Image 1 (cartoon, rainbow, N blue to C red):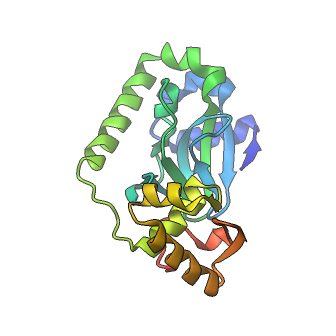
Image 2: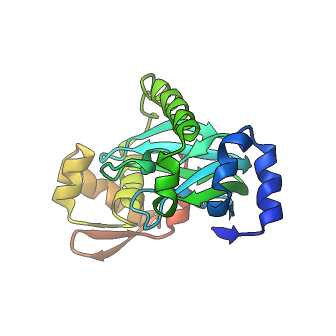
Length: 217
């Protein structure tokens, strides 16, 4: 992410949204955030969380369960919001937002602006409306079809930070036997997709190729 704090640019982008009247009182916190294609716009366990309005580009928003199943929540586009849940205390989630192309957002740091956000009634109404729409979408979702081979790669990338250690524990989360998992890892190793780093340990050879929902495998 690249950040820009030029006030004229911020005000220009804000006028392009439908939230100018609501967000104008938060100008002191706003900045421009730019993301390259395939860069994460939001992800769990970030050190700093941001509330963001998409100005340009599209974002793939998806949820990943512990077994590697992927649920596509939405394709965010201009005027869509990101980071609403981070305004309120909750357990770390499994929702990722990934740039489909070059993306520009207006953003503000949630922790630094939290008091101002919670005191802004119109802003909270905006957040409630956005979260309601997302909840309606979630209730109709089915997991994207995926083979166990693909779920293993998703699990390694998003749940193991690219490196799986311990077959028994991983097999439990993936709802398969350790023997099944070993066979799949052997095939991935033969194909050059993973590299064995030790007993029961495997690392993705190229994590960028193993994207959620990808037809790579």
